[in-house]
Length: 130
Image (cartoon, rainbow, N blue to C red; front, side, top):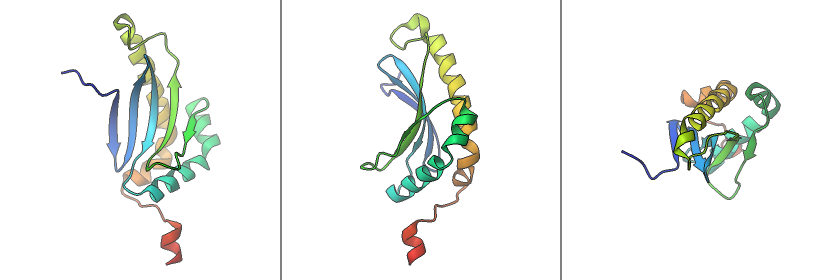
């Protein structure tokens, strides 16, 4: 049955690959939502340090949002498409464009997040100082 949510997520250990619909258009994103704010920021910072490589592998610029006042972080890409979620006749095109962009995003970030998906934890500075 239809959902009222504006996203679809695949999650592994707090790392979500999301399809998001916003005002008729869409974006794909890596949403970093582990239980610890500090850990989320550390994962984000690690990815940000590899920004050039990740964006080269993706094939273009990404939007990097550390969201310092929030628990989560996000790396996303607005999908340019002839499709629009408000026009049912173009849903197929929007879906195809979202899937193609998600495949690119996942391929670009996967080598850098695989260890966390497999259960690795982030070494936090607070942990090192203790």
